[in-house]
Length: 284
Image 1 (cartoon, rainbow, N blue to C red):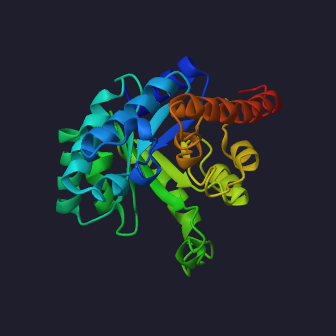
Image 2 (cartoon, rainbow, N blue to C red; image 1 turned 30 degrees about the horizontal axis):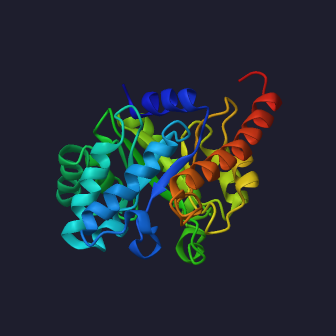
Image 3 (cartoon, rainbow, N blue to C red; image 1 turned 90 degrees about the vertical axis):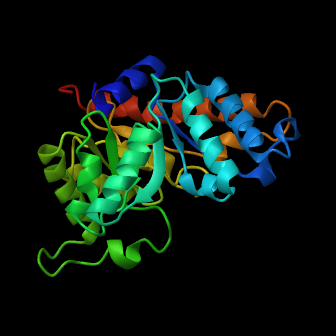
C-alpha cells in the first residue's frame, strides 16, 4: 500500500483528520510520568497519549528537534515511540530534512529504513535532487515545506520569482505536482494554519495533494478557516496537526484523558468543516 492508501484507511477508521504531534517537553510532563531516566519519561508520556487517542488520530507526528534536545536518551525515546505506535497508524517524522543528494540518501536510509517512519517533512530549498532519495520510496510519504506557519515565513516564501511573477510558495506547490507524477512516493505539502488564505491558494493550485496543516492550537492558527480551505472536495486530503494544545491539555494524573478530550473537540470542529465541504461538492 502507498502512504496515501494507509492514511486514507486510518482516516476512515477514525473519522478523523487529526494528526497529533508528539513533542516531548520534560518541563511540562505531569508528575505521573516524571523520571530521572529521560528515555523512560518520554516513552511513558508518549505511550499514554497514543493509547488515549489512537482511535481519534489519523496519524502521529513526532518532531525530531524535541528528541535530539535530550541527546542519546531522546533519540532512543524516539525509536521506542515509533515502535509503540500501532503499525496501521501512519507516523510522520517532522525533521524538515534538506541536503545534497548523497547526504539525503543517507537520511532516507535512516528515517525510512532503520527507523521505519512512514513519512517525513522535507525542505525543498536545494531542489529536486535533494528530495529524490525520499521520493523514490513508493510506500512512503514526503511532505514538502510550502508556506509555513512561523511569523517570518514570508521573508523568502512570499518573494515573487522573476521567472514567473508568482511567489516562491506557489512555485513549490506547482513543482510538487510534477514530483508527485514523476516519483512513486506520496507527495504532500506543509501549509500553516496561521494563513488560511494561503491554504486556499495552495489547495487551488494542488487540488489533490495532501496538506499537512501545522500551526493549530498553541500557534493560534485559524482552524475553521484553514480546514475549510484545505479539505478536498471528497472530505479528505488534510492532516490538521496540533501538538501542545492536545498533549498538554492536562497536567494532572488524568493528562491522557484530557488530551483525548482536546483531540475529540478538535475532530468535531474539523469534521464540521468536512461536512460543509462535501455537501457543497456533491460531485465528490
